[in-house]
Length: 398
Image (cartoon, rainbow, N blue to C red; front, side, top):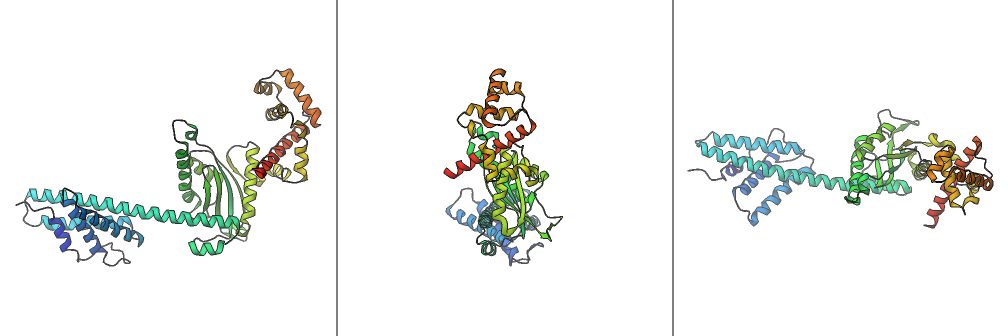
């Protein structure tokens, strides 16, 4: 007579107290018995053609045991290898008895189905535990970033989260470009944006190290990269944000990234973050291409456009043009073209003679002679100061 399907389960149950597999984790008592018990549960599940209410309880017990191993730090490959080794041993015991070819086929079929059951259930349990741990770490890291950026409570939060605070950080202000899919009417813009952000966040640790902290939205934010400094010099092997690293992150996000970076001690992070974002705003106002920038790249522009009398004086030069938006537009186009009258006229869709009239009006109202090199430089800086001042006023009254 052909043995019933539970014969393999009976074999597994009978050997549940046997020695554990060779790779039994020392930190998990009775690991071998637990593996056999899980396999016996799975064998009972696959033995019944129709699911019963009790099956849900058996499956929950199986998943719960796997989740406990995950929390105890047992590697998934160790558990799966133990499953396969135990089933292989039990199957060999059955094959060594007086069983017909049909019996062996039936036992082999049950062995494959129960391995499928425990592999899927265990992998799902481990994945759930990984996601839960990742969510917890992400929440803790974001809370710590907020504390570092505010300058308050960072020591207490570091102790609570277990995240080590470095003595110094690269403070990165990051701008994330819009993905083409976000403007595609056939696609869900919010979904595309979230996926873009997830790809970028997943690439941060491999590129910048597991201790890098970030607080990002779909259009940008702040990244803190630890710098283990000794007398002001960073360790050679410490991952930091470089132009090449930013390219890798950009490729992961599938969009161009623009980053402004400043470096300093941890206690200065609030000021450094403000400086980095001011620098990023300036880089974007200057129309610079995506890439990595520091203060040295725009030192003159940065200094001249800091809030204060110098910036106010530069911006005031364009005050007379405020009632004439067409003249401001003309000045921008003329400066952007390098004072090329023909291309400016084409861009503005006006006759070259009309352009000449506008240029003369601009010079008369502002006192800036655009045909001179110093006049062109002054006009460029005045436009930048004017735009930055407008942005500041907009934010102030928003």
